[in-house]
Length: 508
Image 1 (cartoon, helix red, strand yellow):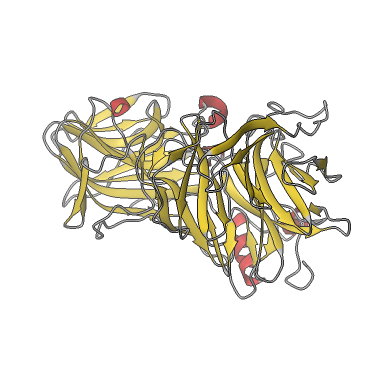
Image 2: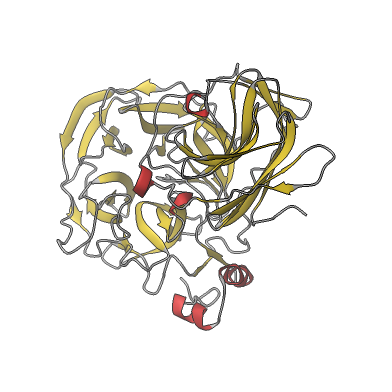
């Protein structure tokens, strides 16, 4: 499969050529190859499917709303958001499972600890309101056999569903045990989770995650099993773990939670998530790996393929493009799909008019407020926004992990201030200022802050910060650091021209 396209270099050969990361990516594009990640930033637990020549997927949305964002691609590498299955906030949502059964599409997902389902006639929606299945587990996965529909769950159990897929016919029962992880491995836990199912060549295939999804670099994995029937008995693959980070120095850490998908010309790939070595602040990013089938009916990653190397494009004639650009001039009447609120979606709190986003203040401090965020990828980037506040309002531009841990530059009644990652607020510049352009420059996790008052020159704040501490292994929550805007105290904030650049740019 690899030989009919551009020659696939190993990490060692790339290093021998002296290719820096950006040069390596440019080389990969010229050779009709792609480079992981295919979707930068936090997009974990993805569940891609193919419908004809189109690919769709959703992924965990955790504490953000709208939730269950739907992405579309024609080549498995370049993805764009096209809808959201959930408009409101229904609690913490993770490990969703997008599937098609007959002519209808379903997403099964846990929300606040209970499995729910939504359905639609097309992947882009409109989607139904959530229906509770009453199952207090997580990581659901759907499969059907001879008209019977089943839902696999996080603990190796399976429940039979009613024919419409929206209720439980028989309660969960245990059908599969974890693959025995060698005692010498460095992992978080056994943690059998993340089931993904498919039928191929007369077999049912069950892929699960084991080892824990964070913690040590070698914790996560993809474990495969197969059976002649949807409910087992299951036999484990001789190639297990089929996907696994073997050592701490690798670029992609804790690789796991994989789902297989095929192309129209019969190639197979697996989508997994992983943390990037040195950049856990970006959350679990999306990787794509080629798959081959053995003569005896098992799937595996081809020998010599490394997630950190250039890999041939799945669809000939396409090239890898830059990640989705979240810049917004607020010229559309509806909130763009790049945006998500923290733990709420209150349509009465904001409006978009005259190329401006107007956000009512909420709470006395940011800890009591819901910020508006957009996830981004890349080691370095710059974000900027034109912010204006009414009397008594506090607002600003942040790099946000959660309400307790964030960094940013803010307009307050006391002046322009900087919040650094260790929790301190610095400075009281420009007291009385009610409007300013704010810029945050993230240069490989070292962050500088700038502001520009109307008709004046840009100024750099004295305080800068470093944000590598803001990641799940330290703070928990399975979250990422993402740009955000907010408003608290009194009145409202008006935001104009949110801009993003995929590099660190100080204003001239």
